[in-house]
Image (cartoon, rainbow, N blue to C red):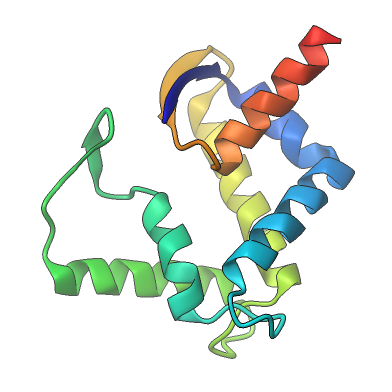
Length: 137
């Protein structure tokens, strides 16, 4: 984990760079698709869903939660990705929902910079890295 400074513009610019965003989505999808069938099952997506840290309270500290409640929340999150209710998520669904969630985060952040603790391989970390590389050049 690392502490990074970002704002809505960082996220929006990453999502709107269709080539970079699609490349990262394809890479993440391939990493999650452990059986290489071109679809993500609930089991394959569970680690990714957990990385969203929906029950985090303060600087990376997770709240002890009821396992049934967690299963229900992760099931609902999976359903958001599974647009056609097939029980699996294809690349298009994964990209579409990830984009929607990232833009919702950007909307919630606003345009004032904030410090956040980010997982090293997270979408937000990739957005910050992309922004930093553009500034450095």
